[in-house]
Length: 535
Image (cartoon, rainbow, N blue to C red):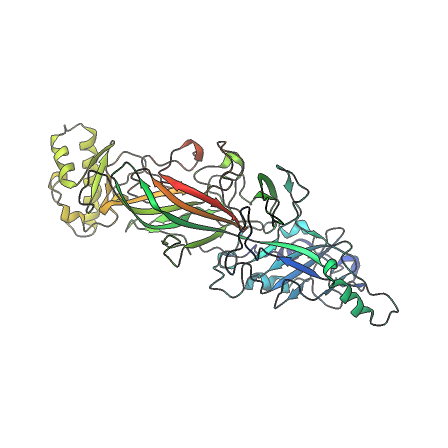
């Protein structure tokens, strides 16, 4: 997945919508308001760890650059007095920067923190005004590296924007306007007074006169831990955790997204948020998989081709690549389907309790395990020509023979003649013999087993298909702990666009199908959701 541009620019849309304004700005004055006033701000970005599910994360609240965009009472962008631009850049940024000049007609404020190069260039080239509503219009492409890049490897910090004010809202209410009301917070120099500009500026910078700005990260954050006392079932079975990755990731989002207030309050002293929330993205009610990126399986090597930049990661306790950032991905309650929800995929080594060596291949068909190829071949020789197992074994051999002939190998005459040493030369055997959703021999090559888990957002709800239950949301940190392995997963990568036998179809409701994992989720604002999962 190489995603294209950050909001395709947050303010570039301002240029797209009203660039046919013949006057060049409000009131025909080239976008410059001669009435000078001063405004100062104070930024809040969760710099200290909080109770009630809030945690700032390391280096993830850093401010490098701020852009201020000012709106009048009609919702139009206003020009900056004494300048030819429509935005104010503050760099290096601080939580309490010096007061800036604004138009005396200013009433609303949008703050963008740490924009990437593309967005910054767009902001700098604004030459016409627009309404606030146009800022979000037709924003369909985003730059993964500008939104979800690891702050520890980039100098610009995390892209952030107004979080909005939800203090007056109740559960179920929707917030549609993220602009900050700055009425009464701008200070105009008194005409005829000595040092009027300096005095107005100083007045604006007084603590009580600063506009308090809450900004939130545009990225979502996911990590996976493994419980020390991992419960592997049935008792006596063996599981060794391998790696994990993200799949079914959004490629579209709104910079200023509508928010619906959820039931979970933040009860700590002075929390950043009053309640948890759920955003509305561009594909909130779209077709299954619309606007999403999926991992694929190479048709020649049968290797999973993971989404960029997500590789196979270690659990967060042991690996440097323990954290993954992604774009928010939300959906209406009726659209909580397997093909819509961001998921993590886990691969590990699993052997049934009867498998004493815990090495080599094992097989499964129709609920019965076979500890090695010899055991499967013995059952094959004992089966009738019309038995389902014999047919499945012959299908397996057919897939192996096709692969062997393509690669100049000789698998032998038939399934009964297969040699286990030959199978070792075939990569991704489980994927090789998968036949869409038709029954096949499950070939667990060297015990390789895949699992998947659709990430839950609101883990306070127990209602099936409840609004806000699944998805990943901006500025939310999904800290997942693997607690239970219920059994073997699949011997093939769980491709949502090409499910195997027993896998759910993309359009299947998530809550109506059983999974393989037991996972506990701890979600923090970062709002952290901590969950223990079972697979």
